[in-house]
Image (tube, rainbow, N blue to C red; front, side):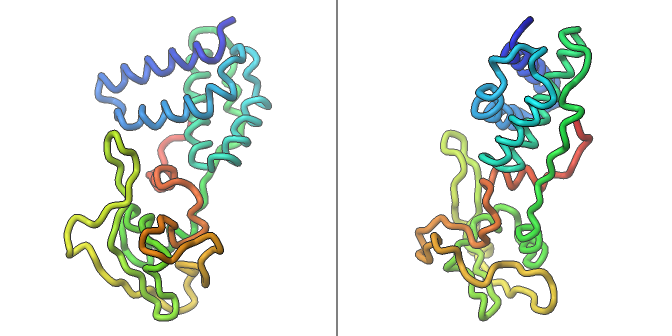
Length: 219
């Protein structure tokens, strides 16, 4: 029986075909390849297809969620489920073991609250540093955004124009908090510090962006 790595190779080639047909985005494949390389292949790749049981997959996804965050685990679950569907289609197994693995939800209440309260884009939200917030005055300074550049990855860069730089007032009242009362002990208040304002935004900007994408049909 073939190993999971062989099945993943087949799944990857099929996805490349979908991109060629205009049915999938090349950037999605970049994300999936990172998940394959960093998480799925190391955890499951050397198993034979029949050895990829529901408990084993559940254990692997739980570990990924713990070490890399819920968004990454959710992506990995979708990839594994898609690969196992191919295994069922080609008769390598009779059932898709991922079907019995609980779906993975990513909960980001503070980030969502901050975006709704200020109206800023997700990249701008993720680029806020602690020294740009004044919780006593109830203001936040927006000057930068998070962007991905080919060959460089994610960077924090200035907004496109001076008009994009603005001082916003946070709403008051009994609404959920937009930011904590004090920065975490590890946070620097210097302008050069890349520490984001809200300590609950623990996932990478890429993963957070995945969380906020409209939900499609579950695998």
